[in-house]
Image 1 (cartoon, rainbow, N blue to C red):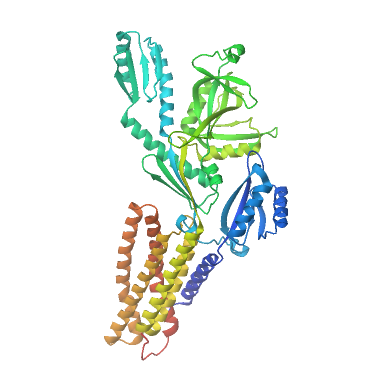
Image 2 (cartoon, one colour):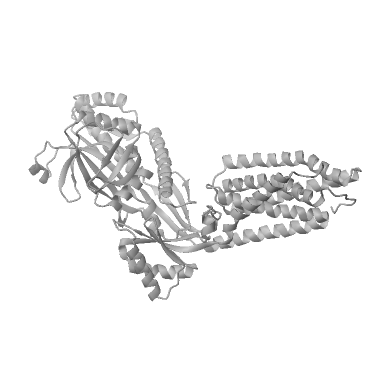
Length: 615
């Protein structure tokens, strides 16, 4: 029978509509302004702190929606941002410097929607506002670090080859200079180093010295690797800290731009992404008398470092392993109820540690915690000067060979162990970073953009409604109904997909697909009118109209999808956002324009003797 679906098809389509409506519903509830309170330096956000906050807000007659504790973080919800900002001052004063506060926005959906994991659409930076950083990567510090390592390597190799030199040092221009007594020693050294150190450009000087600088090819490759690795580490760190819908993009040769939607507290955001800390594993030098160490008389291959209690320890300069080889770390409690960090190394790090511990059983290995802290001073470029702070957190005796898994102890408290494990898990920054620009963008622009986008959608729907009803009567109304269902499905899919974020270009993509959907319905309606003019019965004309229009609709939408794939492949940022939303809209519009409208037509006209058609 023509124009009649089986009952299961009606049930299936009804189910899709209900599910879409259900998962699109959270977008009507909006977001609540919140203040998130977390502990720092070993302090936890406890119930006592929560009670103090409640008391302080009550005394100042500030109304709040709810206070809860989630994963050791206190979350205070408010009705509007004005109350949130007023409460922020009072809460900051109440809790003191042991805790940090973060202004944020969280979905205001009811609990019954949360049970089915229904969430509103994730809004991008241009719609939600937040914190924006422009970060400069300190490449020079890495170059200096490499040259410092080259000094140790060159001096060791020259001594090994019995080539005497008088002095080896690093000049102000990061050029490494080696002085010799005579030309013969210089020439022998030059021939040997030229064949061994391929990444260095060597030059003979007139004063019996050799200058060594890192060659440009290696330097450019190094610069590229540092930037890309820092971007990846920053992305992992932000994900570990629970900041969603962020964007991290390279800008220029040495800069990275970070957008953190929804966050308004710059100080807190800087603390989250700017932590520059790692671990170094070094062998303890026990061959030097403690009296000499106290007088700072130590061998050239060693240096003095300090324990957390201030005790001095002599370590070899050679670093066995760094945090770069750590693939996973987690904090826990040992058998003595003390905090510890369990570490897993990659294959290279595991091999290094295994070989080292095998060859050094009975010796002591130190875990050195290295952190760069802000000195609150600026250099000639206006950058914040970072001070390198080093502290031995653990000294262990090597009793047996270890593999890629081991643990470190000696950390002061569990919160520090947790923070350290999180930073190691997300990755250690390859090079220190400087925040050269910071901006807070409020939600006002976002609200305007969303409002204008909704107004554009509404104007488009009204225009389509007027056009379709005027030209196609009842079939025009059916097309408009399918268009509304299409919009609901797009919103539901965008809300459900975890990696999709709605931006202003994304709204443009939605509006474009609504126009595409109407084009398909116009094509179907015109085909039906043609078949009626060709003398077919109403039922036959409807059937042939949908059938004959199908190939044209599919062809045109496939062409659009190909364009979308090209945009997504070669585009970045907002262009990709536009491509994703257009792709979703094209797929849903094909479904609604063909299947949904046909379903409504079948419900209205099937099993009926029709002499005239309202089209």
